[in-house]
Image (tube, rainbow, N blue to C red; front, side):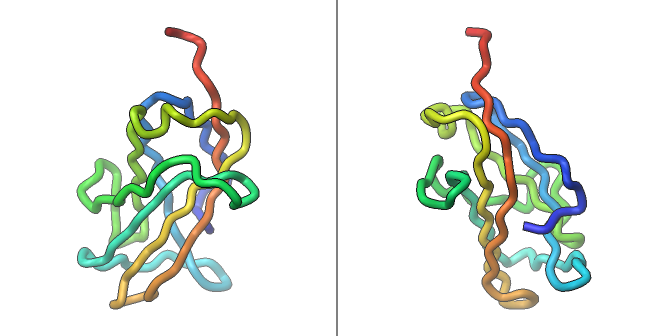
Length: 120
């Protein structure tokens, strides 16, 4: 997934996650307008793309920080959903945008780093 920032987010397993992502397409990479009628789904997968780590969630335009007019989405995954993850370290966030008014169906990937907290 092409993003405006190169920072890899650290996500604590069991916390509620709100991950902002600015998507881009093309060469050179450019943002695009995501239609309000688009469907965006996301999930966490293993670094090698072989294992799914969370169920699929729907990305909402109403999520705090979203700006679909500038291809910025916010992926929200609850601690209840991600708390079952049993690995730490590198993983991938997979997003699929289905927008017939602009890019069609396109899948994006971005790196994340999983950590387990130590406070009970």
